[in-house]
Length: 273
Image 1 (tube, rainbow, N blue to C red):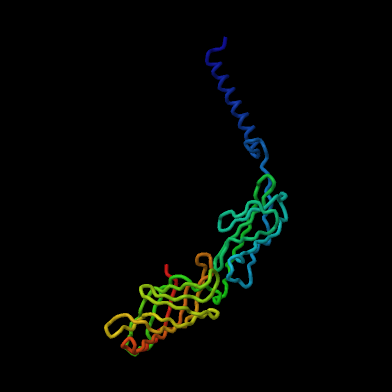
Image 2: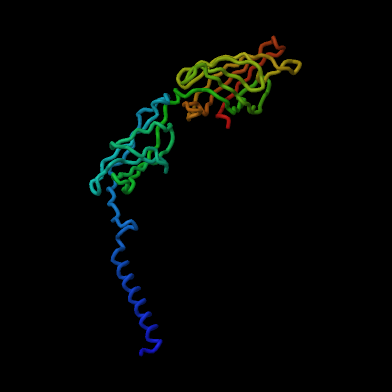
């Protein structure tokens, strides 16, 4: 009769053989997914990815579009559709042609696009990448509208004024959209008037107080003659807008305010934060 230790030895050998068999089966099935299916092949990468844009750009927001176009992959699994991403975020998951028009963009901005080919089972190929810096409409189409931090620097003065005056100026366009004549008003003072637009330049006379005071030290209405032109534009509240300007102001007070004086100023302004 076998000794008791003999059966324990047989049990250990059996366990070892079973473990070896499992190990051998696992190594032979490493290319199979947990659901028993072989991974699907991906489409190749698209080629010739490019971004085209309007030439020239204009100030009408409905025309602010770019076209992203590409060629189908030359190899790999058949393509069912394409996915397009802008700046790391998917903008269309089901493009069935080899182009995409992006209407959610603005002038004077940088955009980065990725396009991936996707097979019918959802397997995506490697992304192709392209970048574009959008152009700008003309400055003459920039809308003079909003609050502007403005500096008035004297160039000559019959009163000996020699200090720069910082002021907050509000321009209000006389039209709902686009560039047109604009109303001038300085915050904190009465009086306003219209500056008439010619391209990127604005000019006009305004009856309003400025720097010359009456003999009693009070504010008086003066003749303010402006000549400014737009030097920079950007998109503000969805419209192509002047964000900086420069020019000149001639300020004249008649003797009806008990003072006769003339001051000349240079002007620089930029949009208020």
